[in-house]
Amino acid sequence: MRRLAWLIVFLCSTAAAGAQTADPGDLVAQARKLTGEGKADEALALYRQALARSPDLFDAHLGAGIALDLLGRYREARLHFEGAILDAPDASKNQALVNMGVSYAFESNAKSASIFYRQAFDRAMTAQDVRSAAETANALARVYLESGDLDNAAKWYQTGYETSRRQPKVPDDQADLWDMRWAHAQARIAARRGNVAEARKQMAVVKTLLDKGTNQDQQIQYPYLAGYVALYTKDYRGAIAALKAADQKDPFILVLLGQAYEKIRDTASARQCYTEALKSNAHSPANAFARPIARKKIGS
Image 1 (cartoon, helix red, strand yellow):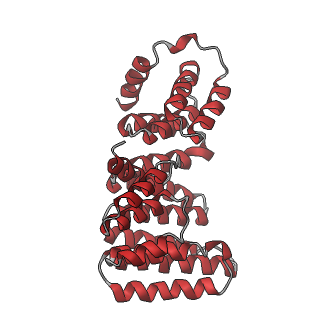
Image 2: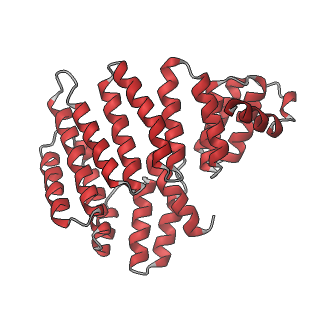
Image 3: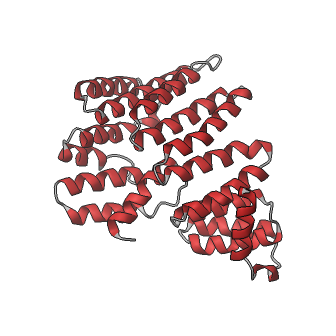
Protein backbone atom coordinates (compact mmCIF):
# COMPACT_ATOMS: atom_id res chain seq x y z
CA MET A 1 0.00 0.00 0.00
CA ARG A 2 2.82 2.42 0.79
CA ARG A 3 4.43 1.67 -2.55
CA LEU A 4 1.08 2.34 -4.25
CA ALA A 5 0.78 5.65 -2.38
CA TRP A 6 4.17 6.69 -3.69
CA LEU A 7 3.20 5.75 -7.26
CA ILE A 8 0.06 7.87 -7.08
CA VAL A 9 2.01 10.90 -5.83
CA PHE A 10 4.75 10.32 -8.36
CA LEU A 11 2.43 9.98 -11.36
CA CYS A 12 0.52 13.10 -10.40
CA SER A 13 3.67 15.17 -9.95
CA THR A 14 5.45 14.02 -13.12
CA ALA A 15 2.68 13.88 -15.68
CA ALA A 16 4.61 16.07 -18.09
CA ALA A 17 7.94 14.33 -17.68
CA GLY A 18 7.42 11.66 -20.35
CA ALA A 19 8.83 13.85 -23.05
CA GLN A 20 12.27 13.98 -21.45
CA THR A 21 14.99 12.28 -23.45
CA ALA A 22 18.10 12.84 -21.31
CA ASP A 23 19.93 9.85 -19.85
CA PRO A 24 18.68 9.24 -16.26
CA GLY A 25 22.23 8.93 -14.96
CA ASP A 26 23.16 12.30 -16.44
CA LEU A 27 20.06 13.86 -14.92
CA VAL A 28 20.99 12.51 -11.49
CA ALA A 29 24.52 13.88 -11.79
CA GLN A 30 23.19 17.32 -12.73
CA ALA A 31 20.65 17.20 -9.91
CA ARG A 32 23.31 16.37 -7.32
CA LYS A 33 25.30 19.39 -8.43
CA LEU A 34 22.25 21.61 -8.11
CA THR A 35 21.53 20.28 -4.62
CA GLY A 36 25.08 21.13 -3.60
CA GLU A 37 24.56 24.65 -4.92
CA GLY A 38 21.43 25.09 -2.81
CA LYS A 39 19.02 24.75 -5.74
CA ALA A 40 16.86 21.98 -4.33
CA ASP A 41 13.80 22.90 -6.41
CA GLU A 42 15.73 22.63 -9.66
CA ALA A 43 17.40 19.43 -8.50
CA LEU A 44 14.04 17.88 -7.67
CA ALA A 45 12.73 18.59 -11.15
CA LEU A 46 15.67 16.70 -12.67
CA TYR A 47 15.31 13.79 -10.27
CA ARG A 48 11.68 13.51 -11.31
CA GLN A 49 12.66 13.53 -14.96
CA ALA A 50 15.11 10.70 -14.25
CA LEU A 51 12.42 8.72 -12.43
CA ALA A 52 9.97 9.26 -15.28
CA ARG A 53 12.38 7.29 -17.48
CA SER A 54 13.64 4.88 -14.83
CA PRO A 55 11.09 4.54 -11.97
CA ASP A 56 13.25 2.11 -9.97
CA LEU A 57 16.44 4.19 -10.09
CA PHE A 58 17.88 4.11 -6.58
CA ASP A 59 20.07 7.22 -6.92
CA ALA A 60 17.15 9.29 -8.19
CA HIS A 61 14.87 8.24 -5.31
CA LEU A 62 17.61 8.96 -2.79
CA GLY A 63 18.41 12.35 -4.30
CA ALA A 64 14.76 13.35 -4.57
CA GLY A 65 14.25 12.51 -0.90
CA ILE A 66 17.23 14.62 0.10
CA ALA A 67 16.05 17.58 -2.00
CA LEU A 68 12.56 17.37 -0.53
CA ASP A 69 13.89 17.26 3.04
CA LEU A 70 15.94 20.39 2.36
CA LEU A 71 12.76 22.03 1.08
CA GLY A 72 10.91 21.03 4.25
CA ARG A 73 8.59 18.59 2.46
CA TYR A 74 9.31 15.69 4.78
CA ARG A 75 6.38 13.35 4.15
CA GLU A 76 6.91 13.50 0.41
CA ALA A 77 10.63 12.93 0.96
CA ARG A 78 9.93 9.71 2.82
CA LEU A 79 7.97 8.29 -0.07
CA HIS A 80 11.14 8.59 -2.13
CA PHE A 81 13.33 7.19 0.63
CA GLU A 82 10.94 4.25 0.80
CA GLY A 83 11.52 3.78 -2.92
CA ALA A 84 15.28 4.04 -2.36
CA ILE A 85 15.17 1.36 0.36
CA LEU A 86 13.16 -0.96 -1.90
CA ASP A 87 15.35 -0.42 -4.95
CA ALA A 88 18.76 -0.15 -3.29
CA PRO A 89 21.45 -2.68 -4.20
CA ASP A 90 22.59 -4.52 -1.08
CA ALA A 91 25.73 -2.41 -0.74
CA SER A 92 23.60 0.76 -0.64
CA LYS A 93 20.79 -0.48 1.59
CA ASN A 94 22.25 1.01 4.77
CA GLN A 95 22.71 4.35 3.05
CA ALA A 96 19.02 4.40 2.19
CA LEU A 97 17.99 3.34 5.70
CA VAL A 98 20.13 6.02 7.36
CA ASN A 99 18.80 8.73 5.05
CA MET A 100 15.26 7.74 6.01
CA GLY A 101 16.31 8.05 9.65
CA VAL A 102 17.73 11.51 8.99
CA SER A 103 14.45 12.50 7.33
CA TYR A 104 12.59 11.79 10.56
CA ALA A 105 15.25 13.72 12.48
CA PHE A 106 14.22 16.86 10.56
CA GLU A 107 11.00 16.67 12.59
CA SER A 108 12.73 15.53 15.82
CA ASN A 109 10.89 12.22 15.53
CA ALA A 110 13.49 10.00 17.16
CA LYS A 111 11.07 7.11 17.64
CA SER A 112 10.50 6.71 13.90
CA ALA A 113 14.12 7.52 13.02
CA SER A 114 15.28 4.73 15.32
CA ILE A 115 13.43 2.10 13.29
CA PHE A 116 15.70 2.74 10.32
CA TYR A 117 18.92 3.43 12.20
CA ARG A 118 18.47 0.16 14.08
CA GLN A 119 18.01 -1.75 10.85
CA ALA A 120 21.25 -0.25 9.54
CA PHE A 121 22.99 -1.08 12.83
CA ASP A 122 21.77 -4.69 12.73
CA ARG A 123 22.83 -5.10 9.11
CA ALA A 124 26.30 -3.77 9.88
CA MET A 125 26.66 -6.12 12.83
CA THR A 126 25.50 -9.08 10.72
CA ALA A 127 28.12 -8.14 8.12
CA GLN A 128 30.69 -7.88 10.94
CA ASP A 129 31.31 -4.26 9.97
CA VAL A 130 31.81 -3.25 13.58
CA ARG A 131 33.12 0.23 12.89
CA SER A 132 30.12 1.14 10.74
CA ALA A 133 27.77 -0.29 13.36
CA ALA A 134 29.40 1.81 16.09
CA GLU A 135 29.12 4.97 14.01
CA THR A 136 25.47 4.22 13.25
CA ALA A 137 24.76 3.76 16.97
CA ASN A 138 26.37 7.13 17.69
CA ALA A 139 24.33 8.81 14.97
CA LEU A 140 21.12 7.40 16.43
CA ALA A 141 22.22 8.53 19.90
CA ARG A 142 22.63 12.07 18.61
CA VAL A 143 19.14 12.01 17.13
CA TYR A 144 17.77 10.92 20.50
CA LEU A 145 19.78 13.59 22.32
CA GLU A 146 18.68 16.50 20.15
CA SER A 147 15.11 15.22 20.24
CA GLY A 148 15.22 15.44 24.04
CA ASP A 149 15.27 11.70 24.85
CA LEU A 150 18.32 11.70 27.11
CA ASP A 151 17.95 8.15 28.41
CA ASN A 152 17.96 6.58 24.96
CA ALA A 153 20.75 8.93 23.92
CA ALA A 154 22.91 7.62 26.76
CA LYS A 155 21.99 4.03 25.91
CA TRP A 156 22.95 4.33 22.24
CA TYR A 157 26.12 6.32 22.84
CA GLN A 158 27.18 3.56 25.20
CA THR A 159 26.23 0.98 22.57
CA GLY A 160 28.37 2.82 20.03
CA TYR A 161 31.31 2.96 22.41
CA GLU A 162 31.09 -0.68 23.43
CA THR A 163 30.63 -1.78 19.83
CA SER A 164 33.74 0.16 18.80
CA ARG A 165 35.77 -1.80 21.33
CA ARG A 166 34.86 -5.02 19.56
CA GLN A 167 37.05 -4.13 16.62
CA PRO A 168 40.08 -6.42 16.42
CA LYS A 169 43.46 -4.82 17.05
CA VAL A 170 42.18 -1.27 17.44
CA PRO A 171 45.06 1.20 16.79
CA ASP A 172 45.89 3.56 19.66
CA ASP A 173 44.60 6.61 17.80
CA GLN A 174 41.25 4.91 17.14
CA ALA A 175 40.97 3.77 20.75
CA ASP A 176 41.60 7.36 21.86
CA LEU A 177 39.05 8.62 19.33
CA TRP A 178 36.29 6.41 20.68
CA ASP A 179 37.21 7.19 24.29
CA MET A 180 36.94 10.87 23.36
CA ARG A 181 33.59 10.42 21.61
CA TRP A 182 32.18 8.61 24.64
CA ALA A 183 33.34 11.32 27.08
CA HIS A 184 32.13 14.03 24.66
CA ALA A 185 28.69 12.44 24.60
CA GLN A 186 28.53 12.05 28.37
CA ALA A 187 29.44 15.71 28.83
CA ARG A 188 26.63 16.85 26.53
CA ILE A 189 24.09 14.59 28.18
CA ALA A 190 25.16 15.80 31.64
CA ALA A 191 24.79 19.42 30.50
CA ARG A 192 21.28 18.71 29.21
CA ARG A 193 20.44 17.21 32.60
CA GLY A 194 21.83 20.24 34.41
CA ASN A 195 24.66 18.28 36.00
CA VAL A 196 27.44 20.85 35.68
CA ALA A 197 30.00 18.91 37.72
CA GLU A 198 29.68 15.78 35.59
CA ALA A 199 29.74 17.78 32.37
CA ARG A 200 32.99 19.46 33.39
CA LYS A 201 34.48 16.16 34.52
CA GLN A 202 33.83 14.62 31.11
CA MET A 203 35.10 17.75 29.35
CA ALA A 204 38.38 17.28 31.21
CA VAL A 205 38.58 13.70 29.91
CA VAL A 206 38.06 14.95 26.35
CA LYS A 207 40.76 17.60 26.80
CA THR A 208 43.25 15.05 28.16
CA LEU A 209 42.65 12.72 25.22
CA LEU A 210 43.01 15.54 22.70
CA ASP A 211 46.21 16.70 24.35
CA LYS A 212 47.74 13.29 23.60
CA GLY A 213 47.91 14.45 19.99
CA THR A 214 46.73 11.16 18.50
CA ASN A 215 43.74 12.80 16.79
CA GLN A 216 44.78 16.28 15.74
CA ASP A 217 41.86 16.57 13.33
CA GLN A 218 39.48 16.31 16.29
CA GLN A 219 40.79 19.40 18.11
CA ILE A 220 37.91 21.43 16.67
CA GLN A 221 35.47 19.25 18.66
CA TYR A 222 36.50 20.77 21.97
CA PRO A 223 35.21 24.33 21.43
CA TYR A 224 31.95 22.80 20.16
CA LEU A 225 31.70 20.78 23.37
CA ALA A 226 32.63 23.73 25.57
CA GLY A 227 30.03 25.89 23.82
CA TYR A 228 27.35 23.22 24.05
CA VAL A 229 27.92 22.72 27.77
CA ALA A 230 28.02 26.45 28.42
CA LEU A 231 24.77 27.01 26.51
CA TYR A 232 22.85 24.34 28.37
CA THR A 233 24.24 25.44 31.73
CA LYS A 234 23.15 29.04 30.99
CA ASP A 235 26.59 30.57 30.56
CA TYR A 236 25.56 32.31 27.35
CA ARG A 237 28.56 34.58 26.91
CA GLY A 238 30.87 31.64 27.56
CA ALA A 239 28.92 29.66 24.95
CA ILE A 240 29.39 32.43 22.39
CA ALA A 241 33.12 32.64 23.00
CA ALA A 242 33.56 28.88 22.64
CA LEU A 243 31.24 28.37 19.68
CA LYS A 244 32.89 31.17 17.72
CA ALA A 245 36.06 29.06 17.87
CA ALA A 246 34.24 25.95 16.65
CA ASP A 247 33.57 24.89 13.05
CA GLN A 248 31.71 27.80 11.45
CA LYS A 249 30.65 25.63 8.52
CA ASP A 250 28.68 23.30 10.80
CA PRO A 251 25.01 24.40 10.68
CA PHE A 252 24.26 22.93 14.10
CA ILE A 253 27.05 24.94 15.71
CA LEU A 254 25.77 28.07 13.98
CA VAL A 255 22.28 27.45 15.36
CA LEU A 256 23.64 26.90 18.87
CA LEU A 257 25.55 30.17 18.48
CA GLY A 258 22.39 31.91 17.28
CA GLN A 259 20.49 30.63 20.30
CA ALA A 260 23.21 31.91 22.63
CA TYR A 261 23.08 35.33 20.98
CA GLU A 262 19.32 35.39 21.44
CA LYS A 263 19.78 34.76 25.15
CA ILE A 264 21.81 37.96 25.47
CA ARG A 265 19.32 39.76 23.19
CA ASP A 266 21.71 40.26 20.30
CA THR A 267 19.09 39.57 17.65
CA ALA A 268 21.16 40.85 14.73
CA SER A 269 24.00 38.41 15.41
CA ALA A 270 21.52 35.61 16.02
CA ARG A 271 19.82 36.22 12.70
CA GLN A 272 23.17 36.23 10.92
CA CYS A 273 23.97 32.83 12.42
CA TYR A 274 20.63 31.38 11.34
CA THR A 275 21.07 32.77 7.84
CA GLU A 276 24.53 31.18 7.57
CA ALA A 277 23.18 27.86 8.87
CA LEU A 278 20.67 27.74 6.03
CA LYS A 279 23.51 27.70 3.51
CA SER A 280 24.24 24.09 4.41
CA ASN A 281 22.81 21.51 2.02
CA ALA A 282 23.98 18.49 4.00
CA HIS A 283 21.58 15.64 4.65
CA SER A 284 22.87 14.79 8.12
CA PRO A 285 21.67 14.80 11.73
CA ALA A 286 23.49 18.11 12.28
CA ASN A 287 21.54 19.84 9.51
CA ALA A 288 18.35 17.97 10.33
CA PHE A 289 18.25 19.69 13.70
CA ALA A 290 19.71 23.00 12.56
CA ARG A 291 17.75 23.75 9.39
CA PRO A 292 14.17 23.68 10.76
CA ILE A 293 15.17 25.95 13.66
CA ALA A 294 16.97 28.39 11.36
CA ARG A 295 14.07 28.50 8.90
CA LYS A 296 11.60 29.19 11.69
CA LYS A 297 13.78 31.89 13.21
CA ILE A 298 14.19 33.91 10.03
CA GLY A 299 10.74 33.14 8.67
CA SER A 300 11.94 31.32 5.56
